[in-house]
Image (tube, rainbow, N blue to C red; front, side, top):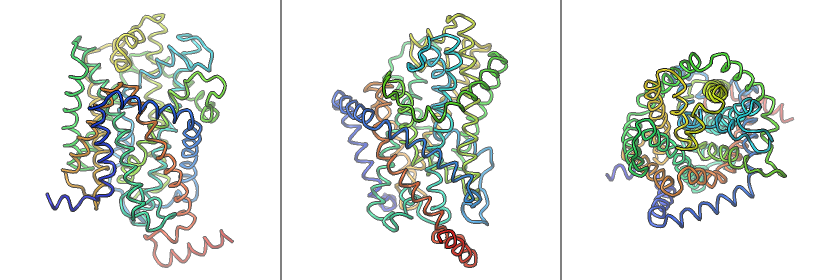
Amino acid sequence: MKQIFNKIDKPVFLLPAILMTFVVIIGFAAPDLFSSVANAAMAFMLDKFSWFYALGTFLLLAFCFWAGFSKYGNIKLGGKDAEPEMSLFKWFAIAVTSGIAIGIVFYGIAEPITNFATPPGFLGIEGQSVEAAEKAVPFTFFHWSLHTYGVYTSVGLCCAFIIWNAKRKFQVSSSLYPLIGDKADGIWGKIINGVAVFGIVGGIGTSMGIGVLQLSNGINYVFGTNFSMTTLAIFVIGTMAIIYIAAACTGLHKGVAMVSSLNMYVYIIMMVWTVLFGGTMFILNNTVSSIGSYLGMVIPQSFYLEPAMQTGWVQNNSIFYWAWWISFAPIVGLFLIKLAKGRTIRQFVIVNLLAPSLFGFLWFGIFGSSAIRAELLANGNAGIIKDIAEHGIPVAMFAFFKTLPMRPILNVLGFAATIFSFVTMAESMTLTIADMTCKDDKSPNVLKAFWGILMGLVAFIMLENGGLDALQTSVIVCALPLLVMILFMVVAYIKSMRCRSQYDQTLTEEERRELEEEEKAQRD
């Protein structure tokens, strides 16, 4: 035990561990106080900083395109002799599933069908109309494609070069080395890393929470049972914690890669089945049309905050999503660089930003279009909207399966997708948090178990203190300081590219001299 304790990076470990333990205790002992404080904090954040979330998220997306497709995109992470350690498919599978897999399963039907039933208020169109049918999926794309992965990829970029090429320690604060030098490893670095870990525990509590809601509500809905939500939540969180902690303890190339690959196969089967039997032509036509609509609105909608209309839709939807991604970003980005050695910066952007965004177009286009078609054909009586109103958003996927043949098999696949997505996300985050709170990047299994259990307790506390609303509150509050930090990380990355000869330790002396001359000529 003493040997394990000596391996822990105590300042990085203690700050978030103490804070999150305090949150758990308050949540159990004084749930009303917990809820009131969280709601007040969220109201303040939305009222004062929605503009900052919107602007910051767009800037991160623009940064990714610059980093990937400028002249710096050809730089190989780890040096010119570094070789990839993972196949493209496994890399892509982990990139898709490690951050938002549980989100796309939960919202794959729920968001498009909700946008169809209750369109954004500022559009001024009637719910369940043909106009609403054509607007529902583009707004879903807006939340689940480029902006989402742009946040993750931007942090990954900022960490990848400085860790693989500048050979800095595996921690978020290393990305700020070009700005603050060795302070990135000192007390300021410890604080930065602690804040990043605290943010991700709040963010992952949200993701785990919606996974628990989907499994728990799905069990009662599919099997007609009436178990209490508290009982189901305890059972689901306990079971999932055992699985994802065990998977994290097997390491990246075993547990995480295997579950991610299985997850992708389940996704593909579900999508193919829906295309074949859920209205092929409508799905194809609506998905292609929605991509076009999305591309036409993505820039103006990125900056639209309803300054006069104030229907609340942007804050309750777009700003919530931006905050959710931001709260995850430091740790997801750090996790993504584990897979990137031997790849170029351009490949990093393609695999972590463009490819997952394309997958998002397919996923939400297929399931959202098919669900909307079912309701249009049945004049609103297909049962999806009705069941969501009666049983809640978590049953949306299972309600949709009633409109397709072989419903029992689809229910099994739906549960499998939820479980695999839950485990993939939780195990990757458990592994990364444990590694980051350790003095080296090979954390002991005891540390992984600690963080895995703590994240499960946070998810349970949030569910017991307000359900989905409490989950949304937590990420909006946690994300603000992280967005400020990420923007500074971007500045540091730009500096490292412009002065690469100072930071890239993989260069030979001859290459360094040539690069110094080139950089000097550019400055002159």
